[in-house]
Image (cartoon, rainbow, N blue to C red; front, side):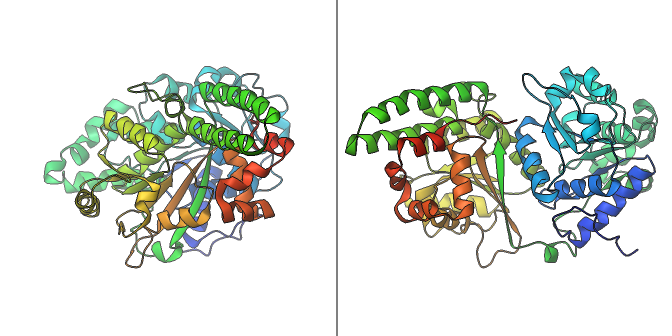
Length: 480
């Protein structure tokens, strides 16, 4: 019940009370060299809390953040937004280097895959703090990834995860044995000592054993749920976040080829033919950003590993479903909606699909199934979802692609965010980094004249751009 310390200098954000408490806890644990696992629900602000921790520790050495590839862009933007002026660089992809990182301080971001293959390089740098984000990726202590992570020395380690680990002893041990080595003793002894507490859970386990495990772990694991008393009043009823995500190699190659070929034709055309070419260019690029299989019109193709957005959707859904949450996924393309449902079915994720030609009676049945909690993932192709659907069970709304028209997007979000909604709603917009989507998102944010033109007349306004303006809008910008 101590009063929270003042926020660290350089933090361009106001922490909510529970975030300030989380920061104080992490600060205490890391300053004692003990590390810890912050396991708050998704949407409670683990990233900003961690950025605040880096600023409060104010060490000369950089902080290393290891995360899934689909979250690199998110981390980079949040650091730029909440800690302006703090150096941030990615250690990922061809030509990656740590030159000068140790003297620059700030943040270095890398992926689990890169960390595994470049563990020696990373272990050779002096870090002030090492963070494992979505730490369930190293929950198997014997995997090559988890072993590589253990070889990177640091005075303090923090694991972030939104998926509960308390109910699996080996996973819990893997996280806490990394953040606080030796705390729980060898895995085998830990398992045999505490197995009764957790695995005997048909009878809710052995009460005393559960309490013994909780006492041991509680000081090292901080988990707040959205459902905890006092948390919801601190949350805004609706939180919107843009999730920038990199194109895969296949997507980038397709994207650049389409820009090159179509721009050559646009420059040679005029009038209505030119306008038609531009509309078709924009559609092609949006499809490539969504998934190569959508653009290539592939039937029954392999879907995983080819699209940055689909990989991020998997990350989001894994976390939401682990919280027993429910989510609406909107796309403006029926073809993409079908690809998403096929992909989820292959991953054994229960989902249903509603689009323009779904009969009314079937629509109503789908709404009931979703509202009753039978199907946690509801994929909707947007215009169909426009009217009269009451889907307040959804705590999350994902816009897989954007309409480039905030009014239409709002209307979709409002399916979940309604009078009668008792829980805060999180809106996730997936944006392909460095692409036309990214630039349009900037325009929509900055509300410039062009944005107003787009909002007024939809994408048609973009057909009036000059060749140079258009090239600037669509060319792929590589992330540094």
